[in-house]
Image (cartoon, rainbow over all chains, first blue to last red; front, side, top):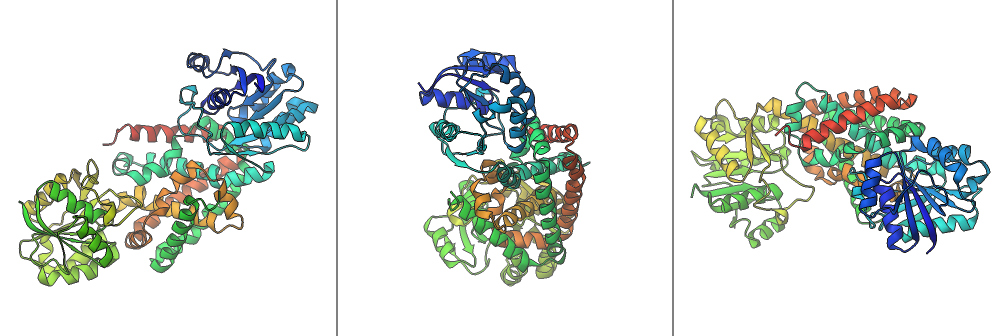
Length: 286
Length: 286
């Protein structure tokens, strides 16, 4: 057993799945769940996702923080006093610069024990009841290691996520936040915005009444966890703002093509977009 | 048998499914397929989607036009000379004002035989090989009847689409085009625009490499048929432009919230959007 005691702070879809995956890989002894929601923790205990409910990470050899990123300062401040020397800490935050700043503030010199990570996996369903040992299978996990991290610590955390079935890569935190702003944070904001716009119209019942499969898939991510996405948008607001501005410019560039009914230009753009997406689906960028 | 001979002009996903659904409902005798793609028509014949390949709708008692809407003027001009007196014509175009204008120009006084329709069903896959007798089951079909249509003609076309399993409703053509611009045409344009924007970036390989399930679903409709969507965007450009402008204004209203990191306002908007979408998914507007 690699880690006799694992603490998971935030036993939702990600935290619960991490616990199950580590157990399935026989890397975890006891898994202690820590979190805000007492009912969710009891459910996680009943379903065998965790072995015990705790209030901190005392004695844990491995800690995962899997909570909305605005909670990190409080979570890390609470964990720091009881954090075992030699324990490794990783996380599942969707933004990395803010998470690292919070960890530096709370952990001081022990920042070397924290190897930041972002598993790019999720669903609009949350909670421990949605957890699965297979959630990370084939999914990407991005590590954004710190200059202070010993190479062995980064390697150990890489092995942990690999044992969960993930494809692990490494990236600079700022680069991570820029990439995710473009392909994840912006689309979420756009989907929320479209649903909110439609919902606020006088004839919204009629509009929703004739919305079909295209609208459903386009807006699936607008059923995502509002608190989690609020925190992401706030934490990564500089990058997200840059992406939002780029996208608005793209729409403004498109506007005259629509206005003029420029079928040739629209056809070219649609063809290029479809071809790019289909290459992506075919796995060209894996 | 209600219609001894049915002509389907455009034997793709929609036209092929219409043929299969009418046969399953025992409403169609012989189904003749008409279209541009010889290989597709031969496939449709081999697979029993159609019974014969034709060059026009001569002798047909019921005609379905299921082609990109820019083709309607040519299709209707070709059909008009041989159109049987008393035949009924319906269609599957995603826009209705342009289709009706094309039909009036081509059919003259026989416009009374044309009952415009829009089955709100589709997928990014096309072609006769994707056709299914069940495609329209539970889906909406909007009729936009004309002042010239005899009530019995409208009723007959309503029964045809109902026999395919669809939920048929009636709407004014202008209203139809406005509603669909908001919940279908705009989302398609937005998805194409996002993929095109990402694909055009210097680090597009990296961006696609870390795009995940949210991006995949958000952009599913960017794999739609470029010619079909070009035609829709051109035909409905006034309404689409209005929706595009509204959406850009929405994003511009959102911008200061992101810039200021206004978590409370973002949280409220995300909560409201999620709640509205979840009510829609729960069937509130059916």
